Amino acid sequence: MKKKVVMERITKISQADDGWSIKFWQKLSSTKRFSVAWKMLEDYEKFRGKNGVKFRLQRTVECIKKI
Image (cartoon, rainbow, N blue to C red):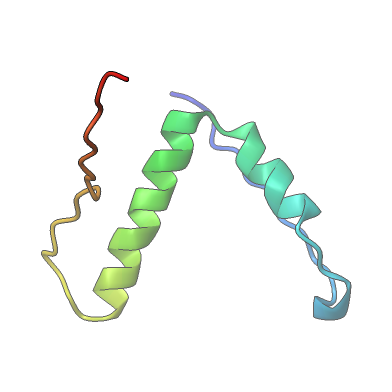
């Protein structure tokens, strides 16, 4: 079983910056980042009382023409 990595930082709000958060997310692989972000969306929807919502990525269509 893979060890779970826990990172935490205690600071005053007035002294908080984005540096720690950026380092945290950069330590994760892109697959893991996507997985965690997706889980946060699910948790947010549960918090709002919308259980069972199925998420999907927005798709855009472009027309590509030869010049």
